[in-house]
Figure 1 (cartoon, rainbow, N blue to C red):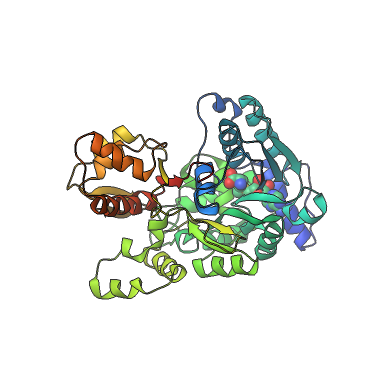
Figure 2: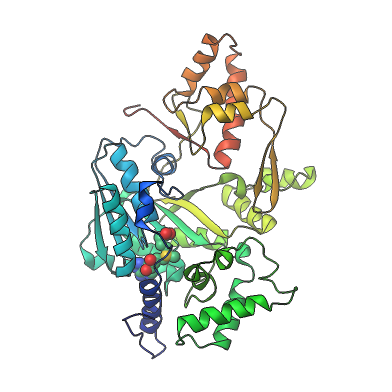
Length: 427
Ligand SMILES: C[S@@+](CC[C@H](N)C(=O)[O-])C[C@H]1O[C@@H](n2cnc3c(N)ncnc32)[C@H](O)[C@@H]1O
């Protein structure tokens, strides 16, 4: 499988070595550095606007130095995205990439080189060894899809939290238990069919065979939202069904793990998916949600929807509110991966916004001014300036009416992670 033979004593060290051997042999996700010439992979967590919105109340001044750690950076998606975005902002940033896999690091380094990015220092090592690596403290840490592969994920999160500055925060992705329904029985069956020490090609072949012959009642077969095994990439199939160590989390478990690490969970990257009201309109039941605290609502929502395969969330060390809020009309709304003019054109008054949230047919009613407001969101105007601009275009609503409608629109677009807030530096 790789040039690092895993110990066979069944110990934690043996399991660690197997995880490392997998990522040496099959860096994840598979990426070709040549593709950097045609696109930047963007995602969550660690988009610069999200970091600012969720961890710095939208008030981070990117002209000031920022130190970020990408812990378990893999082939570099978060590292390359953040490095490029911070360079575009002319931020004097230092990003440290850390991973146990030298093969993954090589891919990440080639991608950075393809873009001419120089604000990243790449280190090979385990995040569990951070206390002895001498890498210093960080304002921000990304840890995406890594902690659930550790022997002790809670200890891993604590180790990362200890490397944060007192006001720093983390963006994390962990697998979601209900959305991965069927994965773990498949992993167990495959372990029973072909020993873990077997040749990876043999294990992949057996996994493909098992998938082909699954009965229609099988839980994995009945979960249509898992796609790594149909992507055509054996590394992705291996990661899903043949991983030597992974586990999945519920919202209460994540809340407990962050608390144990001395952090506060401040938000999930798609807030709407964590609101039970998104999936349920019965008035009697809905009334009960209204009084629940945020994390209880989130736990209820994941049980209700049952389709969250991953949880992307932000957690902070700071003891104050770090999330940007639309009540402050000096906030600048920024659309993410959406063109304002195109979106405004597509929004018809009275027509709902629709999306398929992994099988859930979501519909949101937008306020009547939605298209006029969206047309004026340019990432530079504040909320108050958008109101003024509406007057210039000859259709000024009453201020209170505008504020109400802006907030309704914000809840919907922020809920699906398409609008974030930031402030002009110094505000
Ligand atoms: C599923 S990949 C995710 C890569 C990347 N974060 C992403 O989301 O694209 C998991 C990565 O974690 C790395 N990893 C696993 N255990 C680690 C540890 N103890 N310290 C640092 N990296 C680790 C693996 O080598 C692998 O590159």
